[in-house]
Amino acid sequence: MRQFAVELHPGQAAIWNSPARFKVVAAGRRFGKSHLAAYALAIAAMLDVSKFSGKTLTSEAGVYYVAPTQDMAKRIMWPKLRVALGYERTGGFIRRENTNDGWIEIITGRKIYIKGADNPDSLRGLGLSYVVLDEFADMKGMIWDEIVEPALMDYEGEALFIGTPKGKNHFYKMFMRGLEYNQEEAGDPYPMYESFHFKSTDNPYLNERELDRMLRNDDRPIEVVRQEIEASFVSGGGKVLKPEWFKIIDPGLGSKNSSQITHVGLPEGQIVVTVDLAGFARQQGNRVVRTDESVIATTLISPEGWVVLNIEHGHWDVRETALRIIKACDRHVGCRLGIEKGALANAVQPYLEDYMRQFNRYVTVTPLAHGNTKKVDRISWALQGRGERGKIRLLKGEWNQWFLDQVADFPDPLAHDDGIDAVAYADQMAQVGYISDADIDEWEPLDLEAGY
Image 1 (cartoon, rainbow, N blue to C red):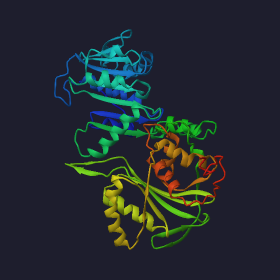
Image 2: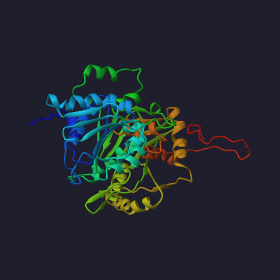
Image 3: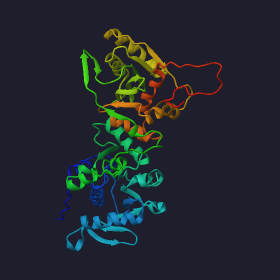
Image 4: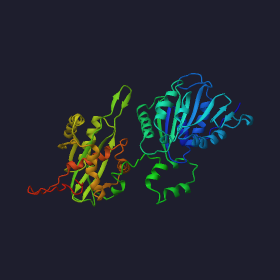
């Protein structure tokens, strides 16, 4: 009996052992994505029964490896498959191969096809039992939607999406879909999707000295390191806001009386808590249906500028959301609370009042409005001018990178902006006095820092 040995490091093994039908893997360079794909393709071609449909897999059931171009597909996967499978005459599994047409036939009679997404018509025809889409971010989204996914229907075939992120595109959407299934279908023995995220450093076989050299190269833009090594989906957006504008500070902690805290070295000013509500998690049958995250931002406003003291974000039900809002207000004496007006604010209001009575902490809610202004404009007007002049600083906290990622992505339509939107609402809460003269006809900006 012939043996087929699969050698994987722990990160690769976690992906391999997942029972999900569609696996989405965002990983840094040299993590070992292609190595994993070669063995996954080999095993898929050896199976004689579909795991999900139970149908017999004959020679007509295709196994595809798809890269952005045909040339790239051959360069990456052809040598790896030949090493993994070996030739039949030497105890391996390859019966024959055709380099020109790009296929390898194994001893079961089934074929593994090497394809390029640059020729979409070449992907049509066969019903597929398994497909690997390598560097999916570099392909057109229609490759999956219009060609590959329909081809998997005959056998309820499986798919492995692998790649290094290239901003927030269709690969990002697929990755987020998998994350939603990770949360909502926990415990399902055969989930439809599952997403995985690994950095280059998660490959234990990489040379640590080389990785350290890459990470310490000051000439390499941090966005490149985060994308290529850390597999971050940071997109760079439209460069309306820049992360380097928002300096992180770490002043000392002052007195802490009960739940109320102060910080040493911060200017005097008013503290506002602004809330961006995004719907509430709710139970639907056996699943918890989650919406976008709600965000609670606490900001110190002074003549010297803003200091964002804290940001909480998460998927909460209406009661937990109300409790977190009141606790955020309770941490700072005399703070003011603002919530975007609308149906969600109306939904949370009764619970806020209950917790106010419970904590003996009464806060007047200021309704925040869009004013028929587009979100992009509203955020830009509030943050861009202040940010360019270094007038918005961030208190050191675990939320900093989450916030800065949204800054870097803005205004990418696929990126989340709920964190910067919540902070931008502080602009409506700031109490600023202005001197005007009714006899002056010339236009003057209302706020030099904001720039409008």
